[in-house]
Length: 378
Image: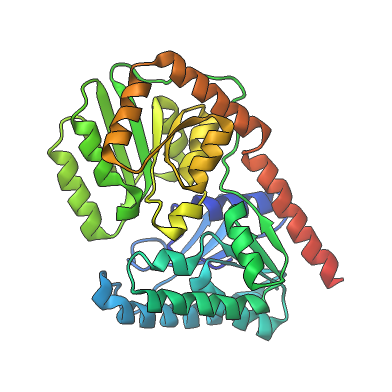
């Protein structure tokens, strides 16, 4: 597997890799340690992790896009060469690329080793880049993706909306493997906290996630305690931290270890997951927050006009509101003041996880996909 992060908190990649190991596969993840802070070699729960470092440091902000693009090319070159070295030690059977910024190296390796290639698109990369780059640059990524997917054998998406998109640009087989979580329990359990109503967000921190809106809405509400954790660009994260420090009932947690996310969600009363519906990537995304809330039996607050909001409405698993501070505040008050509503929505959320949205079902689809690649190669 290729992934362009240090692979220390990527829940999707970890879940897929551990599922494959349980099925008898051996998995090596070649990762990019941009910040040069993680071990270069590690065995993580049976996953062999090889982290590569480029000589250039990562820079942030629009003006650095060319610098970071060159840095990515350096990592891709290293990642290709590292795979060839590892392949001599133990021959690979499948190449599995996570997101577009690893796919070019995967297609090159496929040509060299004549191996099947999986493209695991966690999101539509060009849409994501529209958040920070001009549209002409984002469109270049969309064009590149259309070109590279012609060289893959299988495509994996995280949801129905992404699948529909890829079916318009390629005739390659597309499978949906959602970011669902393993079932923790089949019995509803009330929140494990005492005192104020606890509203939780742990995830990626950027402007499209409405974190500042959450802080403004929560600070005006008595009886509400808001917890915010995650990672993001240093400048934005620092600004959020300072904003939270000025508010008595909002706590900034920083990066939360992956294994602590579900226990913390179990302690919360509700989960926050509002995305800007004008962001094309967020509009069709299926966030981890949705499925974390479901397996914990917690109501979730989502935005109208997003796919996550659509699923929440279908399952009656939370409140779906307009993308505004006033609508968010009203939703928080509604959940804070109505324990019976929280319980009903939480039970619906857990039932949805048990019936459809759990990792056990996604694992079965992943293993079947790998078996189909083996069958095709015979």
